[in-house]
Picture: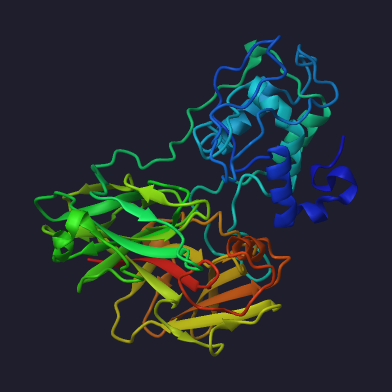
Length: 497
């Protein structure tokens, strides 16, 4: 039996690099996200050459998987091997996939399907590699010497060492099917969409985005009418991108006076990094990989009667040609009952609140391990607030980000993302009751530290340069474009009523 973490004679040192990971994904059709919903497993005699279904056929998608999986491994026969062998599909692997992978690997766009034995078995060796290297399931809030948070996060999908070893043992054993009469019960997959939304608000007009010379990044604001007739308190929201080929990120605001109602077709083009109106409150955001935002129990976001929603959408042009978005939407869930805590989001960093502690923001071409940092001090007249969510955000030159609370006599790490990947971002929601989440008091500081590698060996830099037809790094400054950079943390803050 091989040790999963020492698989293939120590070659996992290389597997930890993003370059090797994407070589697997693009060359072998390796796991691109989590895993897949588990349907009724096929019985012995299933077609060994089954192809994956529900694949994204878009030409430039990172999820353009091959029509067939990798070649069957040794011992893979039509009978699925010894039905008494362990681990096997029915008793061991299917339950793992259902618990940790099914929300993404459902074959409906985000990743190829792994819903039954025939679909999954060809990927066994790749699954062993990807899980042992911690590339899958994807999770980037990683504890280490620099950051030991005093809390865990909601939705952490990481596998235990024993579960990782099980994938390796299953591949080594020739992917036994097992006895269907002994199949472990499978819980329904956890939904990836916001549960029980009160409304889903579609954009009213349309936006077409195309490259203009070297300009690839565009900011258009959408105004949506929630249609509520009394003050309500939002406890869940989900941004639904209409065109994944151009959706870069989005920030959601409350337009408190409804001023944006005058925009033609509900669209204000070229609104840059703002909202185009005078009085707004940030309540959430979306970046690739994020799930719906759900506030803790007894926490809500006040949406006054007459207010509208503004979404500032950052579109990144597709180099293949014009792309249109006319289906972006926002799902919201609310209640009319006032909670004990009210919440909003605050951006700390560049751009955002705070002061640089590292001078002018510039990342020289060729720099490795370059750091930028920002600190924001809680005002002396501010009430005590609780931090219930945190989201790190950089672009493609970034490699590591850490967000801390600095107090007079101690510091507390909120989150660190030391294997930064622009394609896998999320809002990390702290898994504690609101009155036990980290507290910010007057005089405390939030420090955001970002690390960058502005070299061609950084896969993010290589990708960003290739879009512009460049073959060498250039100096990078702060800005909204993908080849500009940011160093910002979004904090979900709650104040007791």
